[in-house]
Length: 203
Image 1 (cartoon, rainbow, N blue to C red):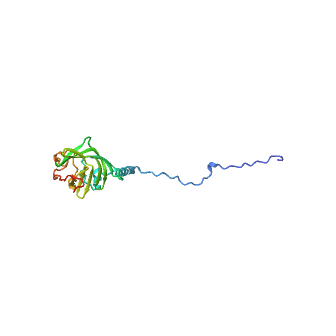
Image 2: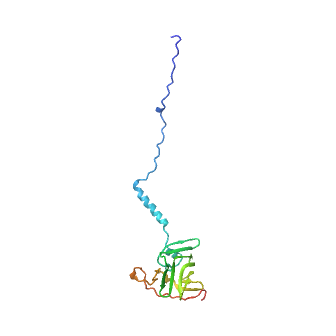
Image 3: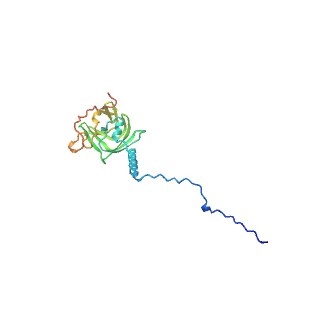
């Protein structure tokens, strides 16, 4: 028909929801530990932590510095040691002093806390250990190992004892001469200690 408007053409837009999307890789799933493996991992972790926290006893530390365990009595419950300087403290499981006689030769007294400095074959600056000589208590300030002998110094005086007398730790109250019936496990078969008290440095 003359004068009629031309028909409009409408452009059909594709539906974006139906448009094909490129294939994307599947999303990675996080690693999951099987529930049955958890107890094993926990036990392994606990055993590693226990091994890392374990440390030698005070008596084992003495042996590592070439000293016999018997220069400390039974009952050391804790200690500290600065490996760079050798400074140490040792704590006994008692609130009072630890006293005992050594085979009738000398009487020893340990305070609840003992301090000093340790090096191989040498203990210095000792505090907390005393020996009774005659009627007097004298502080032992130094212990030196010379071969099979231990030299205990109280300053200007010193006395030597055989190392084999200190292979066992004495017990507070009875020392090395404890009654086996008491269940302490110590024997009284050790021979009496022999020593020569002398001026330090004298031959």
